[in-house]
View 1 (tube, helix red, strand yellow):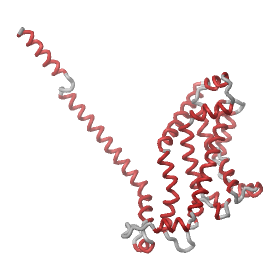
View 2 (cartoon, one colour):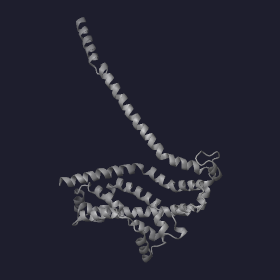
View 3 (cartoon, one colour):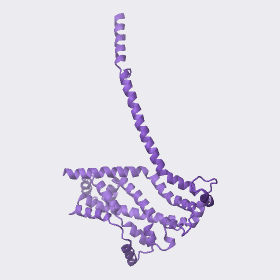
View 4 (cartoon, one colour):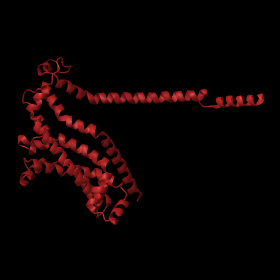
Length: 314
């Protein structure tokens, strides 16, 4: 009996000695690996903090100056205000007439973006599927046209000839005929299996119903990503409203903010408050759609890579 107990104790000691958690070399390697990981994370964390600080510094400076009285800004244009006041925001809201211009900008940014998304999907689907001849040539022509500069003078003449000049409807129509989403959607649609097209056709699903009920739900990340980019681009557009909209009642917020700049004197504290008011909705959209934006960009990159690999395999 005692011999059996001695053997069990010896086996237990051997098992303990053989355990990787008690081996000094293994523990040392694990500790070294953990330190290396912490060092790498520390370096990357420092890089992220420095990059975030560089990008956030102008926004912080702008926000601080917006709460500073104009006379104090003239005395100390870089330091924090000694007296914090929100008067600049009220003055900017009234002087820029942002109550009406925010509504105009919301219409100019949301309606053309929605129309561009819908038209882009219907245009990208037959080209991605190759339902007619020379789709690659047509796709190349669209890509080439994207590198051409916008001709403001021909666009201005065309708008006057068609009765679209100085009109909210005309401005929305001109902004809606933008094919930027088309390039983003072609690669995404190519990753959707063709078997779904055949199954839908066998079930009697029509062309428009198939795109609206099957293709578009599959493209939610891509649509959300392009929606954010399109909304921001339309919201920040200033050249086109400067040329196409002469009536102050039709101005967007960017055109109203441009009127803050005087010929000889600029109230930079008031301009800072106006910039924050104009940028607020864009920041809010980014915060709400941040997850969809990342998924859409990552999904579009993967979709494009898969499409290229599939075509190369052929």
